[in-house]
Image (cartoon, rainbow, N blue to C red; front, side, top):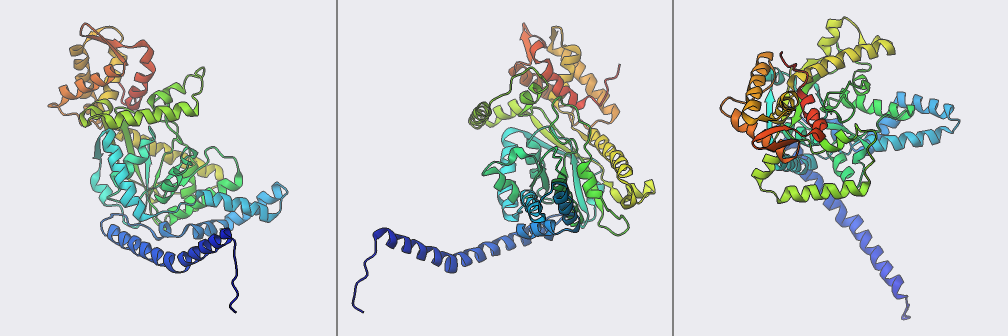
Length: 471
């Protein structure tokens, strides 16, 4: 009983560490988890009192429960069997693939992170770069959307800043769920993005099993009333024009939809525009097939340098360099009324007829989006320069043409908010931005388009080219 047991020092240290881990696991961590969960629940209760569209129970479901719900969904189970048969593999192997896809897609929404951290970051970043403006068209109709409806914001896609800008602007109304491309799957960005309710999507995937898991997630989220934001174009515009809509997401949302008994689905057109898109040169460069591909190191180095320079600028300098960022919300479109007017039961249509119907809806939504894309000073002056500025002209001549164009746009009902009192100042600011970036050349108080920057000017002018110039 009095004998002494001698242990190696390394084994003693390991025992101490093991004991410390057990104490943390059994005593401290449960208390910390309880404390954090209590704070999160309090935050959710407080947030829901001021949201027009409350956080849905589906969004608060634990990620593992969402994964199980997807993997054991009847349609996914059928897809797993077909996939296993087609690829001559055991069912368990195909099921493991489905679990992998579900894990990749399912978000881990955290209301505390979304509203306490994400909202703050979005607000700071948006206001760091731009003068943010928001407008409503048919505002009264937006207020009349039922609080239990499944609201889908349908937007044009000009920049990766779109995610930040719209999340910040609607944070007082609801929590948005985005589909995010594979570009965001880098640590630690992917953890933050998933905690804010976003889900990752493999663009242009031809894998039938993956598409079925994605389809069921989107369908279940829509049925549960999760407020979503979609970019029907499927990617950033490279020439400034709105791209033809892709139908996948809208089809997923509406598949098996029964207007007479299912939750209402309401589409809200959203138009976004910028005086300066951060990625503009990169996007325009992709149109040149002969251009060499930039290395990853070049992208990282350029991005870091950009943010350092931006942070060192004074606020007025930043606003002068980046100008306005504006978002307009348009007239809501109710899926229920759309189907009733067509006199068809969407759930009973064949695949070909269903896609034809979805295409009609998508085209109508994108036409509505076009109608509310803000007319900003730089796109306006870019159009004027391309039309009238290929020869040397005075600033007065160009501004006169711009004022005439503003009058035409107002007569056409375009969403332009440049007041007569601020017109001179706003147009001068736009010209300064174009000159500062080397897009417009200046000599002896005369101005003309820089021939090497025509593509960049066209990129901005194309954002408003659906409002045709009057002869």
